[in-house]
Length: 210
Ligand code: S3P
Image (cartoon, rainbow, N blue to C red):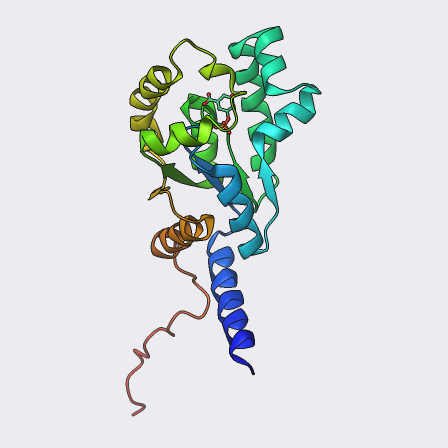
């Protein structure tokens, strides 16, 4: 076996161990806009050989409209209702890596559903990193305000205590996607319930035969 093959085998074994420990649940990435849920999520899914689903894309598909159009035509409450229904459906289709929109975990029903049917990971990030990323895609309806940074600060302050209820938290730093994914893999390995199968056999308590 070459060194590359050995590395691939170790990687496969590590991925298989994590996916088994999900017990059919989905990994649900939560956190504020721009924290890297979709970009890192896609990579994580590939690593674990799981499907990657972006909840916002599914909402757009179901409504046959972009998120901006849904907000403009029907308002935020309508969007949240669709988001709740789409995520409830997606959670029945696991295991998968599911990237959610920044407001999804804030909704009580959706959060309870994610807590019951998924393994949630909060991808936490500092304001400057978030602002640098969201400026690259200035389409998000909630940030179409006179001072997007102040809006973001307010949203983060309101939402962070709720994101903190996720099963795990990792820091999404200004490093490669690969490095952030590694943080998630480590968090999963440290926090997922252990496998039952292959556990040490129960000790023999029958004593020596007389
Ligand atoms: C939102 C985040 C967006 C999208 C919508 C609302 C929010 O998703 O769902 O614009 O409330 O934070 P991303 O977090 O993927 O940008």
